[in-house]
Length: 346
Image (tube, rainbow, N blue to C red; front, side, top):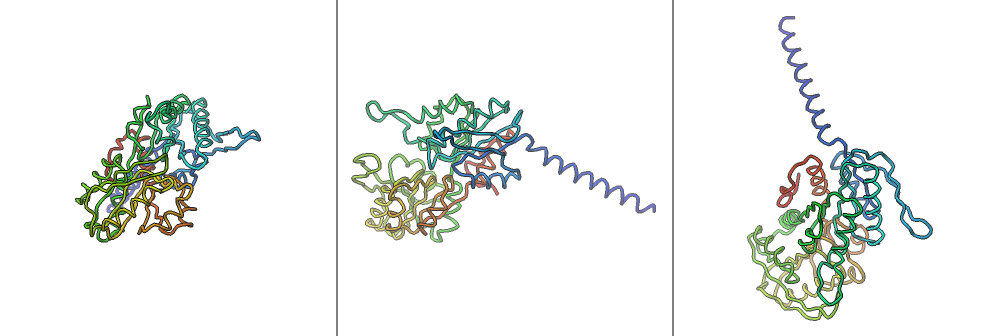
């Protein structure tokens, strides 16, 4: 009995310590709610699964006159609320739904409302490039702020200066760490690759990736006849006997990247890959990819890709839900998210 008492005491102490650790883990994320908009519910389920919480209850519907109605199905008083809505599909309806959800949570006494927008809508309309052109990205920033958003989390903005359109904090995450991981895991001879930007505006993006892979980079200068239509391309750089990896933030009708792939093969590239953060794939995009000489077209799931992957076997998807979930967790706990700029969380 004398020897068993210290052992029992140690066992009780260890059990108490374990219970304390469990309580601390549970206390790390109190008062948090993650709601899904209509644009990408699958992504929200993946984010919540990563966080170990259930998605918040919300019902969205349309009246007969097509007005949007939102009903938040649980209390958000004093909660840290995250609303996930991507700028895809019926963009205008989804954007209006996001703003109504933000406002509904704000006037229901949520302590903070963060809009998580993996693909930011209207991001390509970020400057006045001709007479009487609207700066629509600035308008969207104003609308989100007025609706009551306290914070924005997004990924690979078309132009990083869009962050300055907001008077609230904006965290612009990068797909670059996930892109680097995919290249190293799926292109066996990646050391013999060259990173290519399909336009001059993406030079900073490709040079960063090329530097981290210790490979060269090239760029393609393009001239447009009109929006979504390229009339000429000039390749700057040597791609002969190299694996060319086209990197861009967005692909819409895919005219640019398909023309670029042809240009790279004509210049002597052995294989061509395309890696894009936001795969919109509107209009003739899927047919163009099917007919182009890509080994693979890699996109993130910032936009739903289930239908696209069914229609085109060349499309491969990188899951960014772990990065968004970690950004939400760190934001909620008041931690820095700069780690995510160069690393993919485990």
